[in-house]
Image (tube, rainbow, N blue to C red; front, side):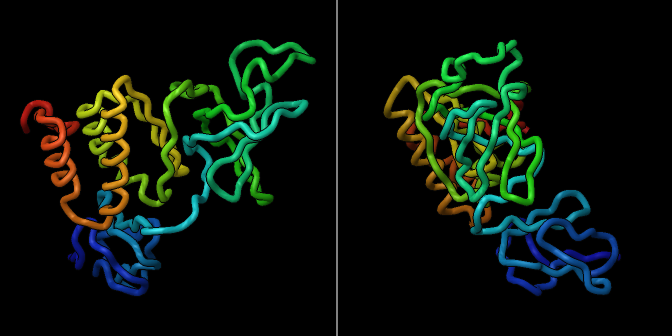
Length: 241
């Protein structure tokens, strides 16, 4: 019978044994040696069903097909737009992937996206030359208007989102802000009250700095209730369960 030797969100180091037996499977950041599952790097443990995974505590963003990211338009080219992605990878949005609307040949592309615009896009392909093909076709993919961009360590994004979106849902509930979290560590926030936007930013920074702490959801919940004077109900707990 298998046995897990670590707790959820525990910091582990390379080579450390996380579980014994064959009941559990090695996930991202782990490997199997005999009947034991070991950590392949420093990170936070995450138990996903039978799989043991590690969330890295630091590191650059490594893009993957299917990731939703926030990118900034850097240049307008003949066939589309070049974007920065908060990583070593440049993104390219071709005209055919940039919008569902028909764009005639020779159209002024600056009328669609301008240099300096921020967009939410989905990664279609990643090449060995460190280039990303980005698509704007899909639910929620769009140009961002107004608001502000906050940068966080990409490896901390899962903690900021929370399990099933619980953490970011609490921030939205407490501040009334619209928040979009890119998996590349770029976060867009927009709110009517500057003080609420500031609270949202402070909360995100707190989550980033305390990402390694167990019980972080409760800590953030108490912090937001103290700052706002309102009761915060985590996502999935609407019925008090």
